[in-house]
Length: 389
Image 1 (cartoon, rainbow, N blue to C red):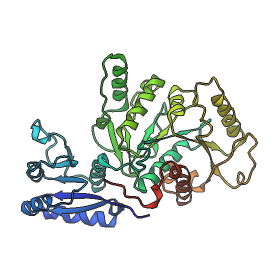
Image 2 (tube, helix red, strand yellow):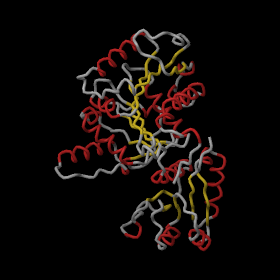
Image 3 (cartoon, helix red, strand yellow):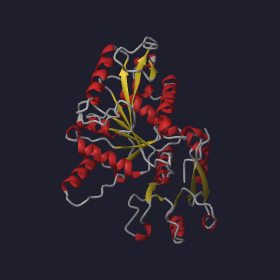
Image 4 (cartoon, rainbow, N blue to C red):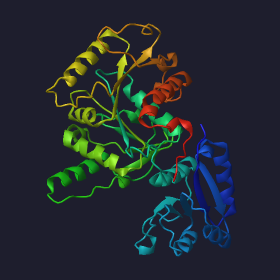
C-alpha cells in the first residue's frame, strides 16, 4: 500500500543534530511515516517557508520558530525543541504550540513529532466523517483479549491510520505488554474527576483530552496513562464511559478508537457495547467460552436489554489460540466464527508478553482480521488513499 508521509520542516542551529536524526529516519520504520526537510541556516529556512508548499508541522529551535510565527502561519501545527524544561513560558506569541525535549531518544522524539501531525490528519472516510469506535469484549478471562486489542492497534497504526487505544479494564494489563513512556501526563483518574465535575456542573464544562494523552511508539498509537488507583476504575459509571467515548469521537483526530474492556457485567463494558460501531468478541477455543458468548449475546439482544437492536449485526467473533481443532467446526451455539487466531508455542516461554506483539504468524492473522473488520467500515483504508491534509 502506498503511504503518504507527513511533511515535516525541521529547523535547528546544529547540522550535527540533523544528520543522525535523518539517518535514523531513513533506516527505521519512520521512513514511511515522515518526510523531513531540515535547515540549519535561518535565511534558508525563512525563504523556504515563504514558498507555497505548506508542511504538516514545523519543529525547531525557538529562534527559528518565532521567526516563522512572525509571518502569521501558526495555523500549521508547530513545536519548539526545548533544552529548558520550563519552556514554553507565558509569552502569548508562543501560544498554540507545544514543547518537545530536544535531546531524548530518537524513537521518542519522532513519536512526539508524529503525534503533533495527527492533530491535522484528514478523515479516512469523508462521507461519514466519524471516528470508528471498535469495542473488544470477551465472555471469559484468559482469552487473549488484550493481546488482540494491542495487536490490532499496532497493525492499524502501522498502516498509517490514526489509532487511539483505550483500556477500560479494572486492572489495566496493557502495562505487561508496553513500556510506559516517560513524562508527567496525569493518570486517567484525573480525567475521570473532570468528567464527573462536568456532569455535576449545570454549566457545560469543556474537558480537553490532550494533557492526558501518551504516545506508544511500539503501537504507533495514542493512549491514556492508566489510573494508579483501582478504586477510580471501579467507580467509573456507564455515563462516565459514554462521556469519555463521546470526547474521543468528537476529537475528530482518530480513524479508530480501540476499546479494551473488562468483564461483561461491568457498566464500562455496557457503555462500550452500546456505543461502539463494531464489536469484536474474543473467545477461547473451548465449549465453555462459546456457551458463555451465546448466552451473553442472547441476553444483550433481548428486546428489554437496553442495548441497540443491531448489537448482533455489529458483532464479529474471533476464536483465539486455535491449534487446528476449531478449524471447520460447525458452531453449536449459533455463533459463526469470523476469524481464527493461531496458537503460538513460544508463548509458553517466559516474557510471553513481549513475544505476543512480535509473533509473525499471529500478527499476520491480526492484519487479515483488521482488513476484514475495518475496510468495510472505513472504505479505501487499505487502498493507498492519502492520509494527511
